[in-house]
Length: 112
Image 1: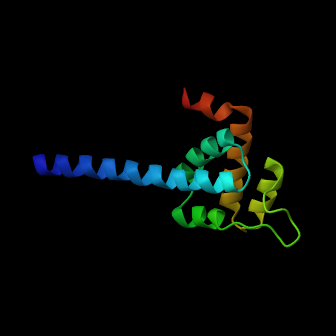
Image 2: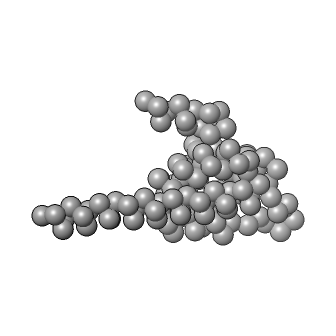
């Protein structure tokens, strides 16, 4: 019985570590895409909780179309660029994360 409890605790710790690594990578990708530190941190937390690893990798590989600036100038331009991924769930999570994080509502909803 003790071995099962130890294994369960180890699995939970490992899951937390993996999630934090994924969150850091997503935050870094969002920063490279031109988002502010505050928005990138907020959005990364929400996106890691709601998207699969393959969906997150699509976002990590996101590039602008020829002729577009390397970094979008606004959050709206970033969301439009995400639309090109062609994944409705990625677009929905990114859009709602951007809106909630830009208005500060994401942190308020966590307090409930």
